[in-house]
Amino acid sequence: MALSKEVKEKIIKEFGQNEKDTGSVEVQIAILTYEINDLNEHFKTHIHDFESRRGLMRKIGHRKSLLAYLKKEDLKRYEVVRDKLKLRK
Image: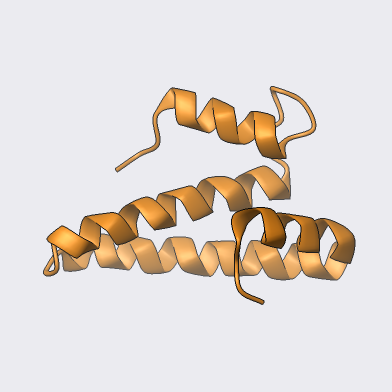
């Protein structure tokens, strides 16, 4: 379920300011989005995995709060991240 090191490095290169930028809001949102998409694929075959569904809901809530923070702080960065990740408004 966890993302591999290579995938995380690719996400950091795409969304971070440099290759060691793991804490910026954009990188955190991107990593959460990839994890959420991965869990959604998992639920297509494992319908009754309710424990993982709770983890999915936590990740969605965390991403939602990070998106709200980014929208409040810098609307331009929010729109760029939203468009790159193809998230709904």
